[in-house]
Amino acid sequence: MDKYTMDELLLAFSLKFENNALEILQRLYEGTPVPVNEIDEILKKVEEKYVVITSDDYPDFFHRVDNPPFVFFYEGNLELFDQCDQYFEKTVDGRKCYLAINQKGNDVDWCIVTENEKQLVPEVNKFFEDYGDRYNLKLILMKRKIKMKDKFTSDDILVALCQKFGNSTEIIDDVIDKKIFMTDKEKEYYLNEVHENYISFLSDKYPVILGALDDPPVCLFYDGDLDVFQKDIHVYESVVNKADKIFIGIVNKGCHYRSRSSSACS
Image (cartoon, rainbow, N blue to C red; front, side, top):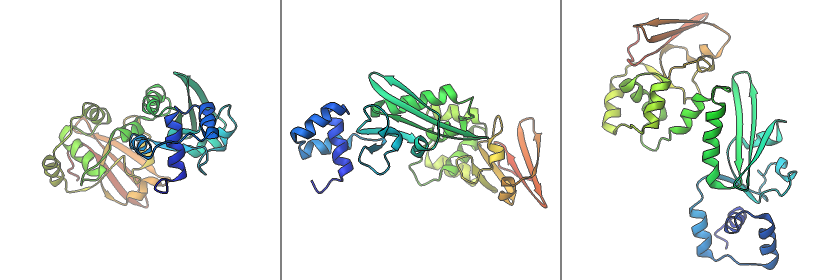
């Protein structure tokens, strides 16, 4: 059993007995064994992030609820449950689900916890569908949909998609939903057409002030000091070619970004 951590052993034991606290306690008291091959099979099937009751990451919040889960699965900022006063709880098919959310200005922090791993993704998707407009979560939703597992960065892939399909959140969201992806050769072709600096909203450097727009561009092509847009500045917006937007931010020195399906900057 040395090949497993204590968290992994408790996870496997909890899942074997369907995360039923009373049954788990009874089985532990009786010393019910779990074969090594069965532990392997259980752990191989786990795909989501999890925390067990003995873990240092297990929030104090859950120690205070009735029948705290031995293991739960989550997405988001788990620390929120010990930091904010507002949370929601519901029961789905006999299993508890929890939501913690905290909003400061345009910034939204959230976490969803489920006792059943299979419930997590549906609950997260439902959260974005129900609260996306209210909390301006559409950018976060698109970030969740894009999982890059190749030689290109997330910025590279989004820029290539924007060059091919158009630099619109709605368009790219639809492309991703329909799983219309590009070959490596296509990506290289469209990226070779770009001769300017660029970032996408998946980047940590994407200006918050532009991300808060009603329809923020997926990709920005820019020249100048990128950090200008992170400061208290005047932002000027104009539209060219009926659709392409140009943003200019000025703080002693200038920097402009162009959001468009073509990357040509002037």
